[in-house]
Image 1 (cartoon, helix red, strand yellow):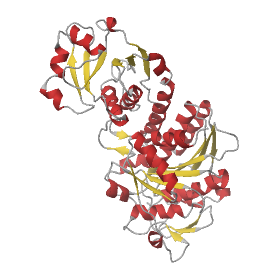
Image 2: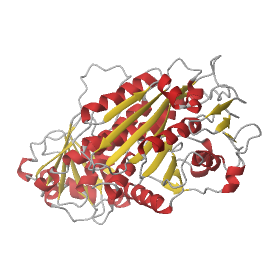
Image 3: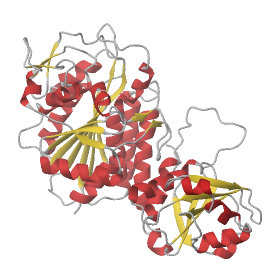
Image 4: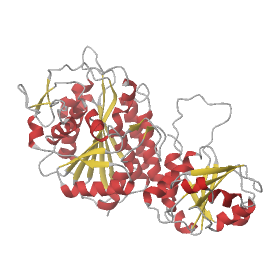
Length: 491
């Protein structure tokens, strides 16, 4: 598990700033206005801070941009980082401000002179999230690695201290999801994935692993068909957090966990196939949410279920043209073995409803390339059968600034999935590919069940840095789903 740069909040004491080592962060809107901490830094540096904040370059800077004064005269600190803010900024900009701090904070001791600045908790969260660095498979250098420290000097330290554990719980969940997605497939096998989820029992989660004989007994032959060409055994892991009222129906989260996807017999092109270690991104997000809920002792009932398989082109692998029977009882003609995630989700969705009778169900999957063509890397596709449920999720995603865009459903798309030899086929051609995939899943959602499908293929792994994450896994929607629980499912 990648270490968290956890924040602490202390009273602002300007008399100690000259002797403070490490890095010091001050905030400025530009111009002559300075808060108490910045004024002391300006005095210690003999006006250098004022010259920077009143410069033409700083005036051009955007909120969240940062400049540095290295080894400032009159101070023990190695650097003063000056971050551009707007006193009226919202939560998203506050996290970006924090991201600028976190990007430069790895392995350092950082003192942030926040004073009475609004949205300090969001700045702290942004700093934690951006300080993430996945180094598990890099050979250590001569210098011992260290996490560093993140200290906020504020005017209301006691109030903010009460939020430290909650902020850290959110970051822990995001980091857990990122670590899982970033792991190579030779490390994160289906068995290793299940073992890491079983370890969450130490936090109070109830965790159950269903092996292949159990899945066969349940009739999950669609899921089992995907993994039958792999040496890694297929599994379903069930995580329960029952922190709400006894008897209340839980919210169910279902994740696609294809630990590596070659495409099977319908094999993918070699270029870029190494990124298919992230095809378990939906399961990673579910795991991250469940960890956050447990760490913050959420007063809510939530179950997380993930289908863990590997899609390989072995001699025993599923073929195009095969017909499999799902747990629901419907038969599926497999047209393309690279459309495997929906087969996994079909069985797990049905099992989640059959066993838990949830209040609502959200599934997450890196499901289609078509959603990337449609929405790029800025938004995930949102498909839903219930307007109120969808609106609640979109509100949560907007609050957390995790892009989400509602997509259509409709009988016309479902028509594309008609099969000559089975009840349904697993692909409906190139037109509307992400929509027909969602329509396939909708077939395995009961009529009275509020349901949301999140296609996160374009957002789970990014090829470039973002304000809150280095390139690689993002942990997208851990925060949004935690927010959905906070806003709508807590007692």
